Image (cartoon, rainbow, N blue to C red; front, side, top):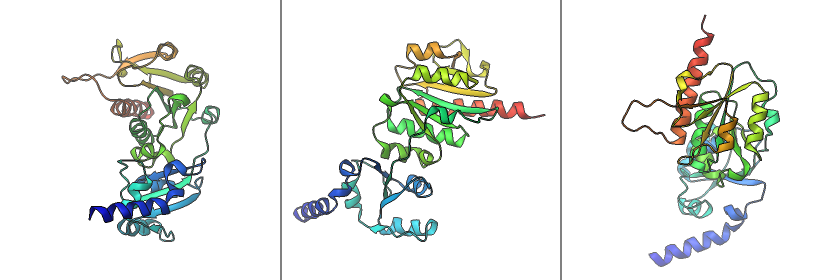
Length: 267
């Protein structure tokens, strides 16, 4: 039994070599997981190169996209094509990479109230994906990361973002300090999060346009990033554990910002 299994996997690998992540076209990427794939399929900016699914996942796909006809594969084939430990839910899509969005374009024609999330050296794709998901849920206009610290795995990021990558712009900038200056010029309060700050988020100005700036777990915000902030704040935690991971902190910050802005709109 073991020998046959090894032989089958070898055969699948040879037949599918052109679609493995490390041999995909430079302008394409594997996306996996139901929500991430469905969002990419619904994004007109994507061009479908290959869509593969197990019979079970194909039946679910047909309910949403009845005209699409994915290739039938088994889970072993998906495991070979995708990164190790990828939670693919039986479906994967090879599609063109989203076109990069410049910060200047993100800051054009903004409403009087707008939220941007800025991540300083947050590199884990699962964390960035989770932040993207929260940012999309709370109506932020974009998430900004530094290009040299951008997550290396788009597939894992897309899965963690649960489709948000195809809904909300992920903007990469070369120089984060310069980007924060541009954000200030666009009329944003720059609110940095620091567990040791004297001011709490409840005391921060969250009206109008707000940039929520969060650093990597452990190292936090870098010096130049801290100096570029208008306010440094902390999230009040009444429990015995006083710290939150980056994705949870972003969700709390977004919730409080939206709550305050919504309250200010009330007559």
